[in-house]
Length: 157
Image (cartoon, rainbow, N blue to C red; front, side, top):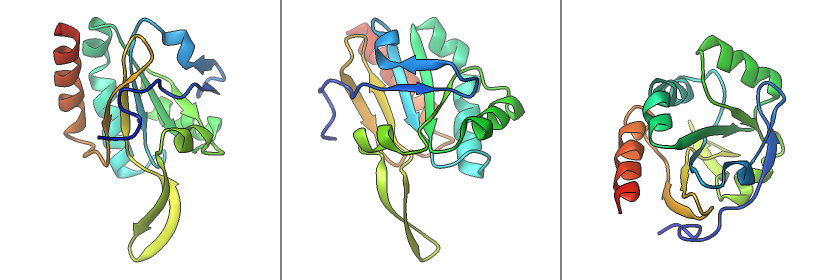
């Protein structure tokens, strides 16, 4: 179990690709899918955001808000969202403050190189503001099906 599961989700207030501010408190009373992804315009991240885009209506129908987070700039998020016709906010975390608060930032290794970066993790936050479930190191293409199934299970309890 991840250290945040069943605990109050860390608060945040960040702007999205359009400069609009989003805070966790704004979504109290709704389920929130907060997903962290490494970088705009990269293959795995594109697959992940597009899968959330394609499921936006299904998620909205069950009272769920989707928020993506990466360390990219507002301008980069704007281009990424526009290119892929995203229907949800991409939050700007250039200092990785929120990624660190959620435990989604740290040492990574790619092609023999060590560096710090954002982990591909998702946090399912319940309407009371607690972290219901944490998905670590998700597989972009398969992830949305798992999230939808879990949401339906949690909502039927």
